[in-house]
Image (cartoon, rainbow, N blue to C red; front, side, top):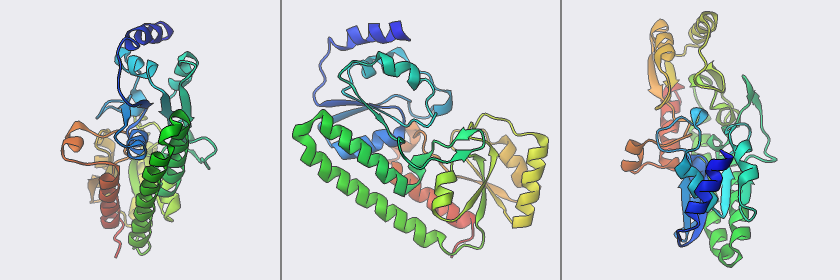
Amino acid sequence: MVLALAVAGCDARTTSTPGLAVTATIYPLAEFARRSGGAPVNVHTLIPPGVEAHDYEPTLKDLAALSRARLFIYNGAGFEPWVERLLPQLAEGTLRVNATEDLPLVRGDGGVDPHVWLDPVLAQQQVERIFAALGRADPAGRSRYEANAAALRAALQALDADYRQVLQECRRKEFITAHAAFGYLARRYGLRVIAVSGLAPEAEPSASRVKEIVQQARRAGIRVVFVEPLGERRVAETIAREVGGTTAVLDPLESLTVEAQRAGKNYFTVMHENLDQLAQGLDCR
């Protein structure tokens, strides 16, 4: 990877891209950077649409984009284990932003839960870190970034208000997900997640774990098991059949598929779709 980044850097510096070059590892951080930066900022997302973030490794094209970035934004909290190998190889002038640094992280099944962006309140703190870094990278544009970030924070505050209003009166407070991505969201709104697998979606639950989840679902009257657009559904569908229920999609927004982008979806539209699905699954008023 060291050699690849060096070679990519030589190639990349022969081209000129107008505007402030920003590279973000995952979709939600790239979306926050685009909205905070506005048109003069060129944001490249390392992990392509529809690719599982947990399984990703940077390509030569990604390394080329990273080599010319003025600002590199990553989630941290162990979400991109390969980032630690990249950081020492970045250009000296590249600003690094760990979007979860100093946030109140919680431990999940298998380590620290990195899915902070699914909590609209904590997402505002991530926006603050990105805005501050944009201002350091481009002091002349700071006032523009500040206005954009303020509008983004207001949108996140409105999203938080929507979640609070919809989820305050639900018949159930527990829900089942394919993997443990929704801990921060659940904690924010007084819910409890029962995860089929841990923080790594590829982890296969044991037969005893599946039996335990089925029993929990029956006791709690759960009839909806949430799956993910890109994830494995077989075990979740088995649990749904066992309890006489069905599955529904809850998107962890680690990535956005090409189809979703073509349909005009973004962080906020998907978060509202998630809210609608939760409201139905939890039988909210």
